Image 1: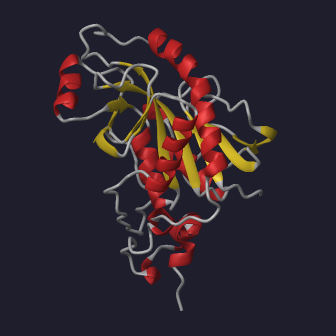
Image 2: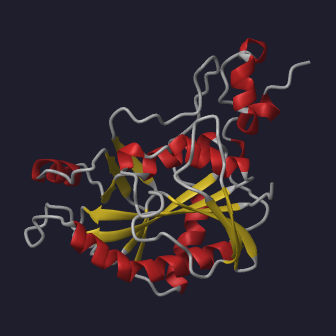
Length: 289
């Protein structure tokens, strides 16, 4: 199977990357089930990439239905070391207007019952997550957005809510009182799993609306979101392509060794099946003599 260093996850409104050439599709089975769909392998700015439509062909999966573990594990199986994620978000601050782009650096978790780890089944790990996005990759994405002349903001807190309903007014006001910047439904689990998989992860958050707190935008509709996403999709593709072009081959960040001191279970106590299933993640750390 071809090894690909760069992964791209497209969210609502970004179901393809027009600039990707030399395409082929790979369908993977993971120990955690099926990903959202086939991975599209191709060439972007002279580099091999793997593109995955987060919500499946035709946008068939809601945020709560996504098999996040399969999606990220599939990237790991392909050899991916960088993931650039595009995501639609609502704005919780006046200065982040619809059609702006945010490169967040923090999360608040408001999801319920989603599985956010590869570990368990006899192998315990606790990875550091104080800084949930790769600083290097996020910096490259921001610089690419600046070059693309997008209205782009560096840093900010992303509230990840369960959905699929949008926020109540009380919730929206609460998140604003916390100092949060944007709100979405998908990226937290991807970031946690990418960190466990030692993959650099960054989000290009596409602002589509003001959530419901804004007096001039007191309701959120899918029509509104899709209209703004279509305008933002072209810019998002430019940012991703520019970031891919600028990515270094060798990584210097801590993401690449996130599991080095995270595994708690004694290697000889790890069940054989768990060891086998998680080999792409932990094989190099579970060497026994």
